[in-house]
Amino acid sequence: MKVTSLLFKGYIFALLLLAVNVASASAPRISLLTVGPGEKTYQLEGHSALRITTDDDDMVVNWGIFDFNTPNFAYRFVKGETDYSIGATPMTWFLAEYARSGRYVKEQPLNLSPAEAEEVVRLVNINLQPENRIYRYNYVRDNCATRPLAIIEKALAVDGAHLAVNVPEESVTIRDEMRRYHTNFPAYQLFIDFALGSGIDQKVTPRERAFAPIYLCEMASDSEIIAADGVARPFTAGIETLLYSEIGTPSESSMPWPPIIIALLTVWTIIISRNNIKHRRESRWFDAILFGSVGFIGLIAAFLVFISEHEATSPNINLLWADPLCLIIPLIIWFKKCKYIVFYFQIINFALLLVWLVGQPFFHQSTNLLFIPLVCCEMIRCATYIYLNKKCLDPTKA
Image (cartoon, rainbow, N blue to C red; front, side):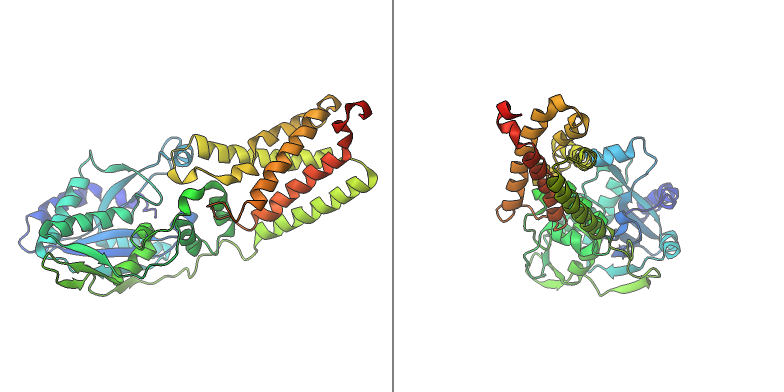
């Protein structure tokens, strides 16, 4: 969804031209532009923009501008405090930008009345004012696709019309929609399934699925504008491909690393645990690495749940198995005096893991199947430690 810094260069120029366009003799022509997926993870859902054409000018307005160089950008993004802005650029610059990156661009002219088209331009010009350009980005509620659609819907209301989405209802969640675009990026989807909680597992309407630009393009083709008198007209006047994709289907890697890594970890855990029980010997180094890693990613989950302002990160049942308290294991497992602490912690941890595993059919949060063997690895190590130190249940035999 990112638009690069080239768009900043045309902002002032475009703002002046759009202001002139409002006063132009003929009504502007409005089109929805959809840019295909790119090779970066934040480009997988595509990008949306509005094309505003008059007799004199041809401009593109979009709401997807952000700057990686903003101070503390990564922290602010994770915390949910990312600011995006609206920008405008000549159509030729816009096409040149995506021609260089090899992404397709499709155009759907909108069947707006002159009054509706003028209202779109008026609303865009208000949004382009310096005091209105910046907005707090929300991945699924307020982004480069939802913003132009909202402006179009407001413009339709100027003469009593409204948008009718004629896409059949499906049993789809926001997570399902995300997975649709992340098929070839399993590691990225694995992180999303870990970091985002049940807030994205609610069923959504076709209109709510339009947070994804590619889906917005599909939805627009099957939608109608219903006028105040009840007369319907197609929302778009067809679709035209202005640029064709030169990168094909983006792919993370030809090797499915997440399943391979987790499979190897599972086999390694079973072998080590079997040898531990056979020789009645602990593998403290293995437990320190495993539970230390779990505790670290648990810190990330805890941050997203308790501190981040992202609405989709809480609640998150993954905190049951990614417990940040697991970080105490690599700190104290080496000391004999701490054996009781580790022993009872592992009992509690095993119980939480069991709740997560058995409770899957009852939780309202879809899980990634790769988490199951990972949780089983934790349970095996908990059970192994409990078995080897079961004398802790009877202090007189310890």
